[in-house]
Length: 157
Image (cartoon, rainbow, N blue to C red; front, side, top):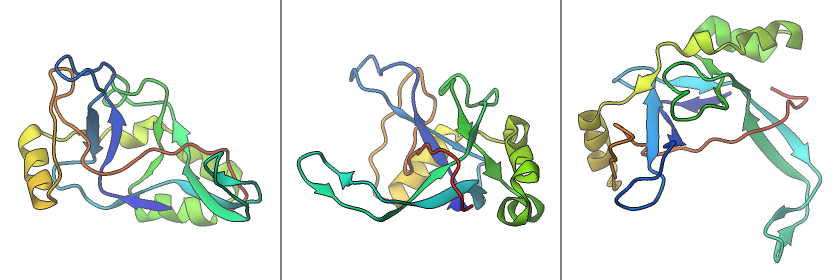
C-alpha cells in the first residue's frame, strides 16, 4: 500500500498564460484524510537511472494499480486513476486476499468521494508547506505534492 492524503494529475489543457500544464489535486474530502493506493512492489534486475549514468540492479520498485477514472478525475485524466483503499476491510483484502478477490477493488466507484480541492484550501496547504501554487481557468485546483506511477501487476502487494 502507498499512503496518501491527496494526489495530482496534470491539467487536460495547458495554462493559456504560461503554456505549461498545471497540476490538479484530488482528495477524498477537504480534510484530506489518510488513505492508501493499492500499490505493489517487486525487484527489478535491470538498469535504472539515465542512459548516460545507468545504475545496475537489483532495485526495489513500486507502482500503483489503476482503474477507469471516475467522473471527478476523468475530465483531467481520462485514461486512469489510482485504485484507492479507504477502509480497513479494503486494506485487508488488498494485503491478504488472493488476486481473484483483490482485483475486485479495481473499481472507480470506490472513489466517488474524491473531488478537486477548493482553491482556498489549496492556498492554505501551500502556504503551510512553502509551496508555490499556480491556478488556471481550466483547473480550479492544483496539485501541491505527489506523483502518479504506473506498473504492471507484480508478485508482491
